[in-house]
Image 1: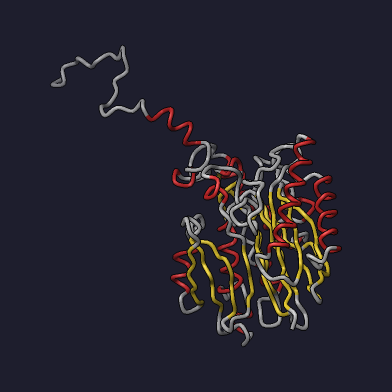
Image 2 (image 1 turned 45 degrees about the horizontal axis):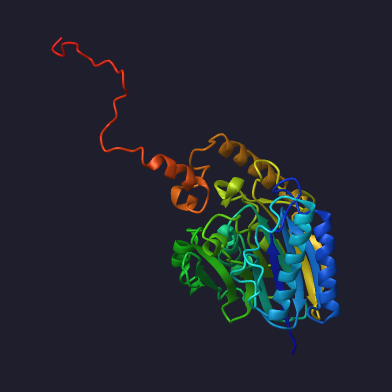
Length: 382
């Protein structure tokens, strides 16, 4: 049976009026390039969209994961888009492009990618989730809820095909060399949570059903680990397979009804709630945010995309969005103080160390008494 690969490859190559939204001319260029990819039989089908200032390329093909032709097509699209963005002088042109020399796939070159290879079932529904102004671990909580929390996913209790649980492949993204561990839920649930709670270090790479069926794939690319400095947040993308022995689409989306706190937001240095929004609201304005996630639903049929449906463009998520804005207001009142601003260990690759280094040599080992201070000469016995 012919296998189908779904590839989602994204990059911030420039945005309009700041870190807000991808301009129309970059959409047009990307569609033209991917259409040529279809004509040249590199990919079967595609859809171009954006999550805030990230250009998202959703592609199907039969070439497998990490395929050089597919990744080259995406990378050269980003390079051509960067050149056009610089001509137009739009903001942060080429921000996520760390090298202009292609090396076989986009790993380590700036763009993020999530891929999944499947044997198509009788019906093949997917959710493609794309976040902006956040980190790779932003999907840890919702993915755990989708595949391991019976209070979120009723199928874990009542569907015998889900009853044996799921296997999580977890990556330590702070290692110089990619390191992974596989853990099974519910058997190793507490160990899974011990790792996934550290969202800045441990992230879900893939999820498999107990019998080995692939269910989810997430980008885990950490830009600063390659660049050695802050060059933008690592806005993740995820592919999640639904129904027919897997969590239903409604169970996938239910995990986003809590606007949980994630790292990122303004200058990649602040905590904020992850807001599920429709495509029409896929732009970041307030304090360069708040962090948001969009969801597109597709069917995959004989290697082609059918859809999409804008999954979060629904009044059912209005209360979630309202709650998220209340949380945003509360956090913004903290200004430069934690917990709104990230902790020191998470600020290592931001611009803050440059500010702190200027203060470092002013510290001395004795308590300082300012000049001109009047000493207390009163009789302490009184």
